[in-house]
Length: 134
Length: 96
Image 1 (spheres, rainbow over the protein chains, first blue to last red):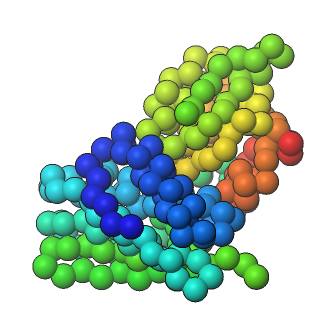
Image 2: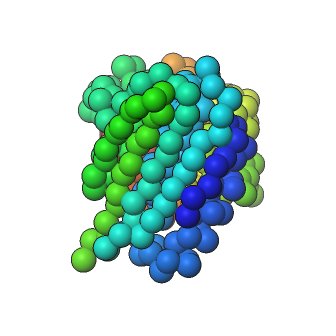
């Protein structure tokens, strides 16, 4: 699956529907849906929120791999931002010290079985995999 | 589809997907809750960090007034997200 989406949170519903359809067509283990939905949303929202210097659509690609799925999100004409280098979140911190910031990328890194970032020609691409437990 | 409102027990019932597109709706509703609040998450299918942020902001506001946000009917998928994010240590959580 390859599809471009406008830079708007309103696109999340369409992304979820397309992901659901792809899982069904490719017979991908449904136990991975929550992780994939969450990682795609977090990365998409991050691009929309912070790469404000571009108006270009965001490309989402999904392909079936052995035992799971590989997903890539590509943002065009943007500065380098490597989500895999995102700072740690102290999930043991007391309530007074907790803030929502950074939690999204932390969850992506926590749930991905592998994750890879590449940047060239002002093109920012993040790829992650999720593999079903045997 | 996301829905939030009071149920017959006076709890705030949340259902559907609480994602970045729905976070503002949820935050506006919960900002109007001024006292101890029980959130029935039995119908919640999905939550992202945007939704977690709504819960965290509301919980902190209520705690500042000696109240709290209590989460009930939490299914396994949502409980996993709470555990990954450390929310299981911050909230009173009751499983479904």
